[in-house]
Length: 112
Image (cartoon, rainbow, N blue to C red; front, side, top):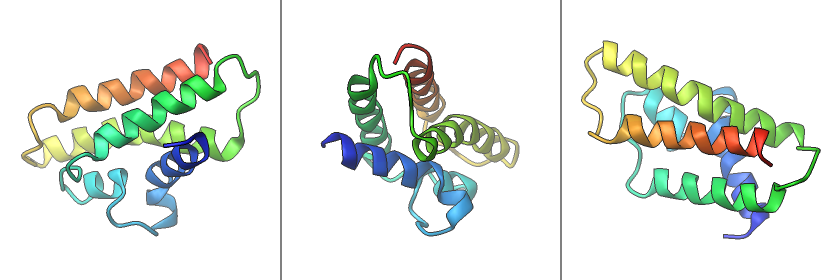
């Protein structure tokens, strides 16, 4: 995966709730009480790693990417907790996966 592909993938996954364009996006699935598609979290983490490496030391981040990353980090945990309150049976490691996503986003913002 190259940087442009990773960037667009993260934007698509993070802004899906606003655009309502991709029903299989990570946040859309969480909102529907569905687990991620197999490999989806792995792809998100890979895209975050590629983005971190590409943006490391860059003082400016583009607004569209920042919005996608912010929503991906914040909304995923919020939707996970809402689902938990509704007694959704999430995969056993989903919360840890969401925490890894949040840490990766934080690293892009603060270390990149």
